[in-house]
Amino acid sequence: MIPEKTVSSETIYRGHVVTLRVDKVTTPDHGESIREVVEHAPCIAVIPVDRDGNILFVRQYRYALGKELLEIPAGGIEPGEEPEAAVRREMSEETGFTPAVVKRIGGFYSSPGFCNEFLHLYLATDLTPNKLTAEDTAGIEVVKFKATELEGLIAAGSICDAKSVAGILTYLRMID
Image (cartoon, rainbow, N blue to C red; front, top):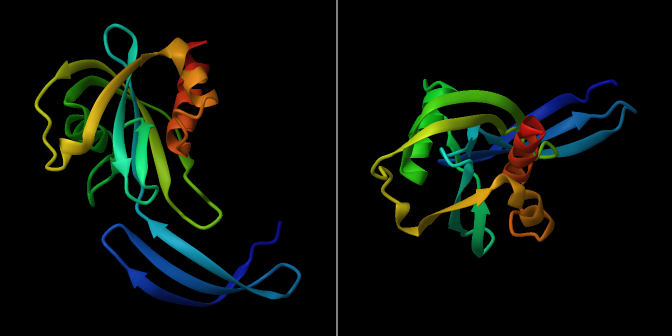
């Protein structure tokens, strides 16, 4: 496959979380097109499994959707931070648990049609409770499910964000 070539690129917005760029490209058939690209730093997503085999999720309000979602814990990797350290920090901030064991089990792009965000997927086990450390935890509820319930929750639409679905399916494939 012949890649598209950038003719020009203009950053039209630079925010705290994302940057929006508009690129003019030459297509493989020698035409021209416009590509709107959301630049986003790499992130982590976590399948946290407690000693009883329950998977921890966070229920939180998502402003962009105007509703609560049930999700696996996830978050950004700070500049200079290793993904595994981000897993430990995000677990503490979102769930109030610290994992003794953190293992990378995969990774994926969130929405490659317009965004370059890559999520590193981790399994976190041997969880120890601690105090929630994030400032904005008032709207987060930790919910536990057995692995046998997860496919049904996805099928029912109770779990519907891409990172959670991809993470769960990767985990279920591991434990089969």
